[in-house]
Length: 417
Ligand code: ASP
Ligand code: MG
Image (cartoon, rainbow, N blue to C red; front, top):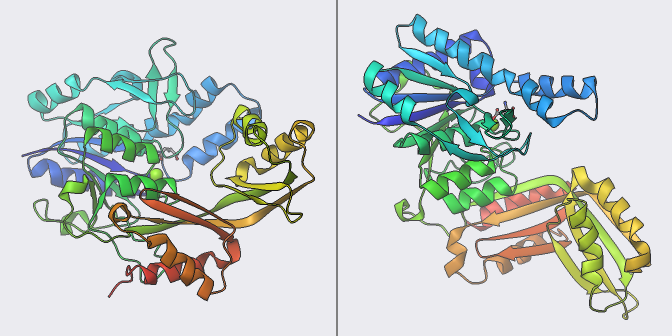
C-alpha cells in the first residue's frame, strides 16, 4: 500500500463524461489500497475564458480580483469530481486552496507556494479512507487572507507540492500525452518516449519550450526528490493494472537512471525575438547601459552575443527577448539611445531557439560542435549561440525550425529504431 497524488489537467476534466472517467482512474488506485489525493485543473478552455472576462471588464484590473475570478475554474471541477466519486461509492471531499491551507506569497497571478500542512489530509486517509480532491492552481496569502493563483499551468505545481506535503510515494500527472518525448512528436515522427528522465534534464526541457509541465513543478520535484510520473489520461481505467508499469515517463533523480545518452532531448521555441544594437562604442559600461534599463523594465534577456561591427571599430550587441516583450524591449532601448550611443537598431521576430539538452554533456566534449557542423551542412545559419553545462541553444530563422530539430534528433541518435 502506498500514497499517491493523481493530477488531472483541463482536457481530462473537460466535461462530465471525462470527469466520470477520472473517477474510475481514482477508484482503481483506491481499490488497490492506496491513499489518494487528486489535484484537478479547470475544464479545458475555462481559465482562458475567465482571463478574457477580466480583460473585458477592465484591461487594467486589480490582480487580487483577477485571482478571485480565475481560481473559480478549479473550484468547480474539484466539487464535481468529489460528487462523481461519491456516486460510485468512494468517500471523497473537495478542498480549495484556502481550506487546506496552501499558503503562498502575495504575488497575485504568479504566487509561489510557501507552506502546506498535510496533517488533516493524512488523518482523513487513516480515519475515513477519504480521497482528497484538491483544486489546483490556487492558494491563499496568510497576511492578506486573499486567494492567490500560481501562474498558468500552475496545477502541476500544486500537485507536486501536495505530494511533498503528504509524503506521497509518487506524483502522477495524467495528461493528454503519454509521457515526455525526446522532442515534439508532432514535429519529429521518430521522437521517442523516454522511460525516465532526470529532474535537471526535465527542468531544462520545460524551460526551453517543452510544454508538458510547468517549470516550477519540476523544480519542486527536484527539491523534494518527489518522483513525477507523466502518463496518459486517455488510457481506459479498466485496462490498467494498478500493480503493473503503465506507459509513461518517470521524472526522477539522476542516480535512478540506468541508460544514459549524452543528449536527452531537443526543445524549441518560436516565441523569441532578436534585437541587435549596431555600432556602439566598445568601452566599459556599454552592456550595463543596455541591459540595465531592460532589467528595470522587467524584461528577461536570454541569449547575448557581442561582435565587432562592420566598420571594424565599434561593436554590435545582439540579444533575444520573449516575443511578447519585443515591442517594450525596442522602446526601452530607443529611449536610452542618448546614453548608449548606437547607430542603428535591427530586429527580427521570425526567429526560433533550438536547444539540445543532456546531463551527459558534462562528461563529453565537442557535443555542440557536432551540431554546428550538421546545421551548416543543411545551410542553416546560426544567429546566436549560448551554452551551459548541460545544454546549448542556437538561434536560427524560424522557417528552419523543423529541419533543424529533425537534423539534430538524428545526429544525436535519438530517432526511434
Ligand atoms: N487552469 C489553470 C490554467 O489553465 C491551471 C492549470 O491548468 O494548470 O493555467
Ligand atoms: Mg498544464
